[in-house]
Length: 232
Length: 264
Image (tube, rainbow over all chains, first blue to last red; front, side):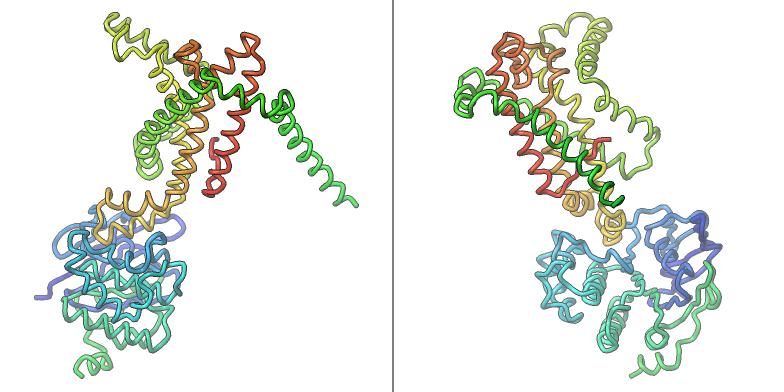
């Protein structure tokens, strides 16, 4: 039986000018799901509702079998990497990374922080403030910080859009390794079809606030390219 | 030509207004020489007034900020029943004549005595016509002003950063101390200076609630009032210039912190 990590059950979010309507979608434990679709389709709103940034007008958000619709963000074990407002501007890169680690565990997890920074190629930026790094570097810091929170589900909103092709591949491979190591489930919004095909188990298309294709319950078989990449 | 005339008219208004304010505030400097002013300010009575003002306004500001920081945050971020009404209520002491605030404090004591008997009178909680009463009168205006200023500071902190902090596992309280307060720091410091400057300059509520007793409740504004009432014009001018100087220092501090005066 498939274990469900995250589920949107008949979720509606009405913002007046725009709404996502009656969306149902499931993310299996350990699955990598890509959300694609035109700008303004409601993809970000789906992630924000799941992360607790917004409360749905109707419907339910489930983490496993727990209803977290009204739960505060800190009780969801989800880490969300948004498109903007990525980093805390008053903290340097190291403090941003360490922010997700409980104070009492920081010394013990010091090597984790350095390991993540090295893997994402941001180790040389640790003492810089967010204002002094590029957009792509900020995205990598935000991804590293989210991973250091030890989430069960990672929500990525175009989180590699500012990276060049090679770096995007390195970050993708690192996330894939983390997924395997931690049984992490990932939902990624992307406009990069190649990236979606390479990394995701399943691609769901969102348009005008609705799921256009993609089964809400049954994972679509792995794309051939991704299957090959994973087997190698 | 028409464009130049438009600009000249506006700049003339600005220049006239600035000159008027500079003249009436600076008149004191022309009244007596700086040496004489310093001599008057160095006298024991003036020094005691200044120390009393600094002490009471410091305590009132600390109490006002301690109450206003949580109150302003709650009003800014949370959906609270009657939020609009509470907002108006807290703004009232700022817009009412200050004398009314002092008078209302006196009436409050009368009402308490009527309800519970005269047991309060003369006890430690009876702050009428005492130095502690000065602090209460300053606090009555300073705390609502602090709430008004801090609301603007908290509103400038992006809610998304707070939610981000919580999605990384931090509690609401931890987010407040780790994200909100540091990001609102400059606004809070500028607000503290503004509230302190207002407390130092407070007069009406102190006059009514704490009285104007030389050597006891004569903070600088009260001392100025007493000096002018008794014909000691030079003393009054010297103390007025001191308050103007403190105002200049406070405004410079606020500007340096990038704060804005949000009162209305």
